Image (cartoon, rainbow, N blue to C red; front, side):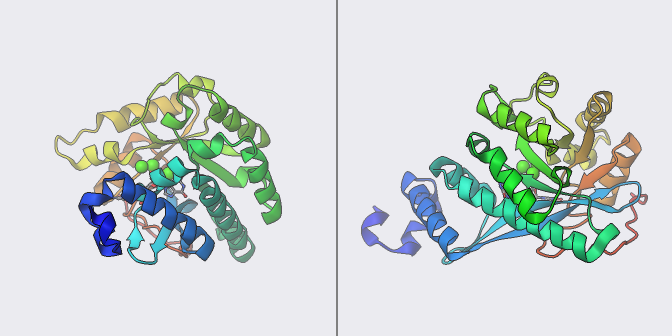
Length: 280
Ligand code: C2E
Ligand code: CA
Ligand code: CA
Ligand code: CA
């Protein structure tokens, strides 16, 4: 109905956001924005809980839509995955963040984070050239493969196939692999045996349980044991309070990420700071 009006205002109503028309419009807008340079990358610290050092940063894409302004990746990443533009967008994020990371190393030396974490979609992993593209970007930035950690979801690897093969290839070259949103997707602990994984990112929903009453968080407790038992690094996601940080540290978590430590920003401040996590 709104199509006849031909008005952007009409198209961008919440109701039509759900429609195929709106997704097609968003997809077309993504194409234009890729050409116009409307995408940016922001960086969120991953903190070592014992020392409060900024151990790493996760790169997260931001879209400044010419009409709508801020659009969440939660809304546009699925569209980019469906229409294939995630391949180009993902390469932009990978290249931008690796260059950024190399710059921090040059400027900050030992104070720079030790790796950059980049989200990669199943659609990217299924591109036969993907491992070569990653290798070329690392070479162009003068980075060793271990400087990069690729975050993939369990769901992306579910069912094996090309995506798992790509992960294996990357891992063989020295790039490290994280399972993102661990515990929320097609969870299978068996995946941890068959796919070379270095890091488990424990989903925010489980971290939230710490402060959701009862004072117990069964899953974060279980997952630290799983991680340690398998020799993996665990990173707790979405930590928003000192209480959660202290609880996680007591459980034995060494790494965490969340608004409590820092929001995603274009230029994180890596100067050493004293983050108090003891006072719940
Ligand atoms: P994710 O990979 O699980 O990233 C974590 C998300 O949680 C980010 O949302 C981050 O801003 C947010 N976050 C971090 N700490 C907190 C916290 O303490 N509280 C709350 N409420 N949120 C927190 P963002 O940037 O909106 O990204 C959402 C999702 O979009 C990401 O989830 C990821 O799945 C996807 N995404 C973002 N950038 C990229 C990208 O470059 N490539 C791909 N393939 N996916 C991306
Ligand atoms: Ca992630
Ligand atoms: Ca996550
Ligand atoms: Ca998520």
